[in-house]
Length: 137
Image: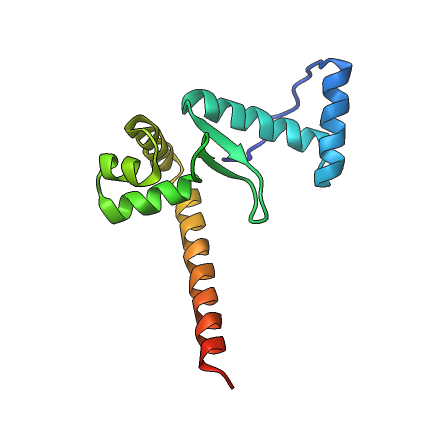
């Protein structure tokens, strides 16, 4: 998601919403305004791509299918099969969910390709470590 800033926008939120937002900001070590920007951008993406969610984890915040895998995983499996139905069956998802994931990928190709690359690099590093341990001293 692009982070270009055009200027301030004034909005009002219920007190309980601001309290929850401030607690989340403290937990994440981020500014309230940064979270508001993130939530608005992600909300727009979720409206445009129904069934898409954003989740946090050790590797960062990433898009995924609701009750399903991260989008980078969907794309990686699709690249292996080259077929929406086979990908859907493999991931236990509907073909419609896979099509939405692929539409999102078309609009955010570099972001998803970066996730795939980083995960492939991590898998290769783990494999090298495992081989070295297996080989012994």
